[in-house]
Structure formats: structure tokens, C-alpha cells
Image 1 (cartoon, one colour):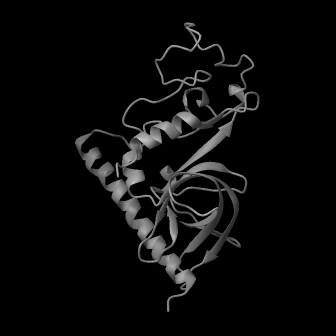
Image 2 (cartoon, helix red, strand yellow):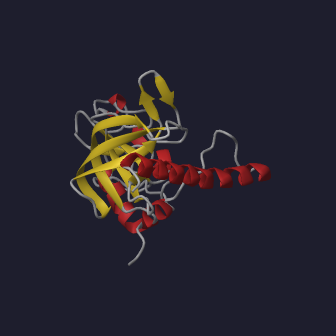
Image 3 (cartoon, rainbow, N blue to C red):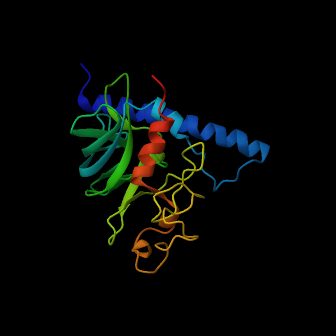
Length: 227
């Protein structure tokens, strides 16, 4: 019977194949001159949700890197504490297997794979690999969207969601409304944006144009396949 680590290698191969499928459209687009080397091929939420077992809001609890049985690849097992299941079904705690990692002084670096550190809060698109039954991160690095919390307002925002949805659902900071919508008080500008004490200057660059967590949830439900 295959061992746990051999099954994990199967998941690694599946992830490599998935990465190849993502990069193939890039090569075709480059031949047409549509994109350059710096532009990622962005998967849409509709594509990610369709092939995901679950989409979860979770904290990374721990990670462990190890060799596969043949010592040809290093894999990393990340344990997630699921705070909320946004789509699909998930246990309260789940593991995902990620190609790459570090064992001793040996580093196996795999491009376009997500990186988790203990304490990370993120939206994770979890895919169940059919042959092995192991969970992997759907879409590679695109399947992990980091969460940042405003230190003053405690509002949570989702990083990396730009271009994920078919329509513009970006939310100007502090409004809680889609881009272009007037603030609730009818004012012409968003007074909480910028370095005026809102706390946004303490977040990641561009955080003022990212989605609030609640806006992301609404957009995600709208992108989910209809049953």
C-alpha cells in the first residue's frame, strides 16, 4: 500500500501539472504579444471555486517540511485552523500539502507556490487531489489570499484579490461599498483613506484599494457555481 509520503508525491505531481496548465496560456498570449513576462496569468474566482473542495478563512498553525520516499523532492505539510468555511465543507483543522520547502540545509524552491508562516491569516482555496485524497492549495500561490487587519478600526481586508472577480468589486477603504459607490453619508470623498489616522498606512502597500473581508465574501458567493 502506498505510504503517506508517496501519496504526497502524487499530490506534488498533480500540482506541477496544474502549474503547467496555468503557464501554458501565458506562453500562447506572449506569442500574440498580449502580455509580458511580469504579468501573471490570473485565475478567476469562478475557475478556482469550481475546482475547490472548500474555500476557508483560516490561520496557519504549523508547518513541517520533509523528503518524499525517493528523496527527489521536498514537500511541506501546513496545518490550518479553519475559522470559517466560506464555500464547500471543511473540518475545523485541515492539512494542505505544498511542493517545496526546507529540510536541514537543503532548500527545494518551487515557483508560484504559496508560502505559509505560523500565525498567517488567509483565504485558502482547498482542492482535494482525487488520486491521493490529499488537500492541496488550488491555483498555487493564487489560492492563498492574505488577510490584514487595520490596527485602529480592526477591519479585515483581503490582499491579492485584484482581478479575481469578473466585475469590479474593489472597495475604497472605510466605505464598505463597491468602488464608485457614494459613501453612506453622501460625502464626496472617503475620509478614512490615507495616512490620516485610519491605520491604513500601517498595512500592506495598496491596502486602501483592496477588498474588505465582508465584500470579498459577498463577491465569492456571487462567483460560486450554481447548484
